Amino acid sequence: MDLPRDRLLSPDPFPSRSGSSIGIPYLLTALAAGSFFAALLSIYLSRGSTGFAIIWLPNALMIGFFWASKHRSKLAHVSMLFVGVSAANLIYGDPLLLAMSLGAVNGTEFLLAAFAIERLLCFKSPLESHRLYVKFLGFVCVLPAVVAGTIGATVVTGLNAGSWLDVYVSWVLGDLVSTLAFAPFFYLAVGGLRARELPSVSESFKFLGWLLVLSLCLIFPLVATIETVRFVFAAPLLAVCALWLRTETISCVTAAFLMLLALVVFFDRTLFQTGIGFGDSQLLFVIAFGCMVVPGNLIACVVSRLKTAERDAQEASRLKSEFLSTMSHEIRTPLNAIMGMFQLIERGEVPDRQKLQAETGYKAAMKLLRLLSDILEMSRLEAHAVELWIRECSLETLVSEWRVMGEALVSRSGKQIEFSVKLEGRESGTVWIDENRLGQIMHNLIDNAVRFSEKGAIGVSVKYLASTKVQSQETLEISVSDTGCGIAKDQQELIFDRFRQTDGSIRRKVGGTGLGLAISKDLIKLMNGTLSVESELGQGTTFRMSIPQTAVAT
Image (cartoon, rainbow, N blue to C red; front, side, top):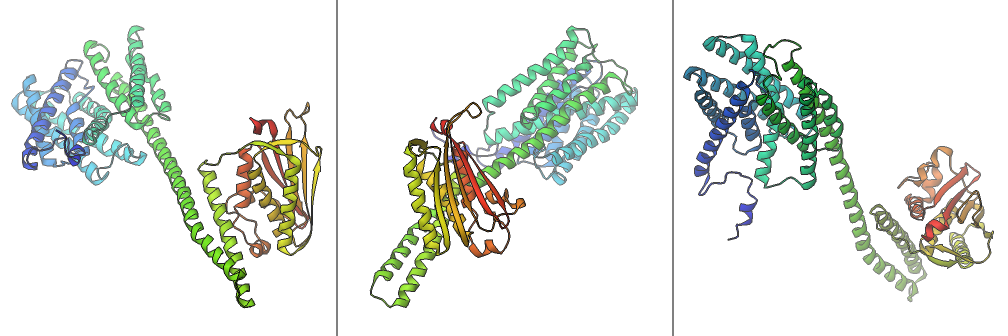
């Protein structure tokens, strides 16, 4: 039987059968059972070694569940943690009063962490950013462990004698390391259960690979009779590889490695000495473990945010290009109708004044159509949707077309400008080129030359250079020169940027959007060629393009 879609996508890992009133008892039972088994396993592994609590799972389990679950009753979580920890200590053989006291201290530690999660982190993921991770370190890992260690050491030594400092250091170090390693892991586990998500294959392989590397770093000192704490040399590995590992992978590797280390210590109880003091092996282990985990997570958080920002920027650019492309198409249809109406008015039997108005409207519509075409071309270039159609073309025919086009642009401008085209090096023959795209580039360059020249001359020079010892490729070189206003040195690179124009009254006078040169340079780049400019203020401008024929032909 197929389940409803809302049931399949339910975020609750413990859905009730007939309402939330029935689901809560199952949840509380699961929390109590989880705390009990986690505490029993931790006690067995920790007290079975040398008194150094390498792991303490119940608090980290409760923190992770409280953080990620939608059921966030602090009273319920504290009660179930108290029940689970007290029962585990009773079964292990502690007196009733001591067992209940330890359960109460663990509940207090969880309450401090829960308040920090609620008030300081606002239930956000500790792996979301480096700022949240630092807050997680200070107010979820360190502060609750210190407070609980102080209370716990006082209670244990008061009821069971022993060294207060030994108990305090063991408690703090065990809780600190366990919360650091397991709380994010349980948070991710509960979150994945809510979302019904499984890790990807690539993340699974990364996890297994790095767990193997760190395990070898742990096993090698045992085989070589070197102190295990010297696995500290593995610390930079996780930090460096955080550049391409996700924080989720690092957290999973950290938790699995710490559990593996606890098992190794349980079977080889001589790894950590019983004496606890500054610089002792336990402290050195915690420092080494922290140096491995904390920098790795911080680097991964920063890298993750940068990658997310990059993806968002790329998506925004894609959406913008799609929007521009769609709008250009949508506007072009009614614009063509408007231009057709102007032409009908201009050709009809109407007064000369109305014909002049129709001609003015038609010219304005043509400018708008060219602008839309430029915007559409720009969006296609940004989306890498422009493909070249390379074919064999007659060089002489191309030059003739450019001559006609240039003369038409000059004639339409009404300016006294002399236009010339010169073909050098090869008067006949063929070239491999996309003639439509090259014609578009030539139109942009010649049109710019006409617009920024009031008088003088515009010249187009075309050269076909054969391959030589110095130059291994046949090259088509084209230059467009004018005697116009020129471009300042500091503006010559800016003019190839989108929507960028040179400053000054001449630009404001001639108008333009600043897209023509940007589009031309992108098209030349697609042809594996280059486009450059040489200019001086008041001395004119020359644009040079070079297109390698062998690169284009292939």
